[in-house]
Image (cartoon, rainbow, N blue to C red):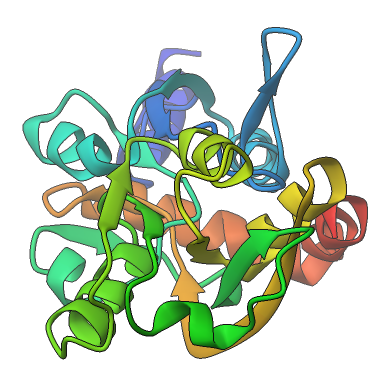
Length: 240
């Protein structure tokens, strides 16, 4: 009996993780349909995905909500084990964290009020544009519109897309640049519309601390199993 237990323990250790371990997962829950809060419960594609990976690979997760631009710092400092938050894999981010294999590809979009007559030209001249701080939409506007002086109006950064969307509806900004699937979700429940798609072909990945290679392998294996079983496709059909 003792020998059997030792063999089982060795297999778990060799697998690089403790079966039944709990990992702290960070997300910015203002990004439907990927992550949001409904009646005090985290919901969305990313939430279902990380829970499905955890179930498949035999660990537990504790999800914490925080501002998007603080997620990587919390991961690097060890306050988080995993980040899943519609986060695009970029060279800059890969310098400080490791990413899983991609699980989604998205573009950026331009959103205006429903009664607006503006088109993509809202990005030019003295218009006021909003983004969420630290997102690829933020980076795209900064590099392509602000630094080139194509945009000469106010460039406003927000802690969450909910705040940005509220300012748009209240006419404090003329447009918001954000990920297309999220824009579509907001357009279903807010008086806003998409007027342009910016083809950026961004891959989303799940981030972990660079030192935690075993956890990265675990997550990648979980994604692969969900792909093979058809579960990942089921989640796509559920949320999109």
